[in-house]
Image (cartoon, rainbow, N blue to C red; front, side, top):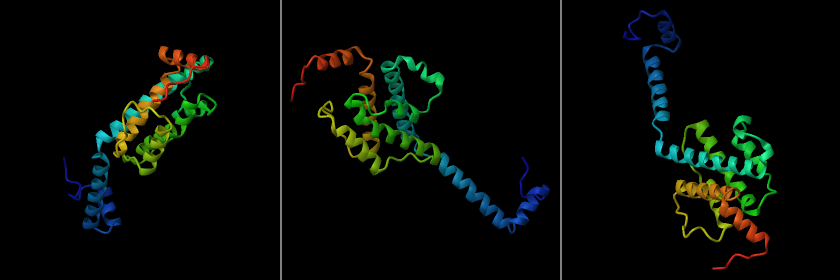
Length: 188
């Protein structure tokens, strides 16, 4: 491979000239390469955790929407975005689902920020939204959210997916029927 600075390429020579010489050209090239490396060298574990949480919730969001309205057809074939699926929840469903909408939207925002900035971050505002949604439910399966934002995001995603899945699970249907029949949950 030839050296770009060997003087044999007229385009490179002209670019060097336009940029003010070899030193400026090399500095700009080094800065660009460093910026690209920093974007490549992201925290892949954090990225994976965010993407897994988003995909997990989307799976059960799709399942829920198809269960409560089978006339929608195949949502995968319709190529609806995550945001469109959340809009289909519309806030008129069971309170447990309605309370989760803000957190589900926030999860999508975190994933979108990752896609557009390549930075795997969960802000304090994101964490507060997830905790607010979770705090509406008295029984958190004995788990207390930690202060680690990614842990809170994952706990929210697991809970949201479980709540969405309950519309199609055998247990969830039996539980809903018991409520419709007038049974009240035990207070612990």
